[in-house]
Image (tube, rainbow over all chains, first blue to last red):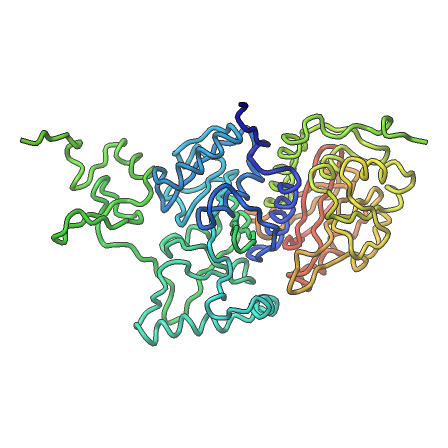
Length: 294
Length: 202
């Protein structure tokens, strides 16, 4: 039996045209969520069907693809999407942020600065930043039309009233080009400043919710805040245990059941590059050795 | 009468030609004022430049009503070619068109003849594809807006001469508005609705 053959990058041409038209409108109206006829993909919702469709619509044979999941190139989601495009499009894949032309990401922006000509594709679960404040699509659509975003400020204010600071730590709302309030997808708010004036094109795809939106390069992206409670980044107050980086976003890893834990870079490529360049953290002294049981 | 066999060809490789053309259009839209080149080759009916033909083959289908200006509809060639290769309906009412193909922009109708989209759905607007005299020589236009680092300089021979003055309604209408793709031969420049004219000189 012949193995099934797919069109280049899996999607049929009519679907790609429809997605491509949506991407062009999304770029022309920064931060506005363009509805599109999302297709079923050979992976469940929540695994990046929106990002995969956007990547499939833009990908060409000369592209170099990198896929990250929470900053890591080595997790199931990242590996399976990378293999998916390796198989259906035959594109070259990489883990290096600087070598990639298209980077599909789930919930992180790489630490290494992006450069012009790159495209960052975000997987988005809930594209509507106002959805948990107003469940009706007709209402949120009108709120965007009128730029009526008071409710979002009330939400941030209630954080301050209850916790003393803005406690929203991820999916922190931003305003794009001084017009649309946009959900940056559940990236940690540590990454928000990287979206502002970024040389790379940023595309967002939400498969289940059927929305595509975009931030063109060199576009103003401002995290919402108050004069007396300005936006602040957050990271664990520790250096990376493997590479010693003091400025990267860290994952907390529980190492035993006695409260032991370590902090390591969430961006595996960034961490490995630093280790290769000779930087070491407190726990990276010796490579792991197998121990024989006695 | 032209039969199907006499129509100019479409893309030789539909899939990869459409992909590379789309990337050129996407890069143009993401970097307004920058010159992008369409490398895919396709046959062109009389009156259509290589760039506009490639864009049509890449983005048009049965979901996108197309409006043709007088220059494009002077002979039935363009409409027939579009119908065969893209299945896109060619319509007379410009206010519901997804794309407008303009062969002689000197006679461009007032922009309010096209769709601006609504405030709720600003994406339901007409994208203008204007064939212009040159995108390398002519008066200079200094542009700013999303996608442009600082300002961008575009040298182009564009008719109507007051195109940017007309497009200034995009500022008041935003998020509604008109996106424009300028085409000369195989070179394209996009002016999305967020782009503003800073200064123009000769």
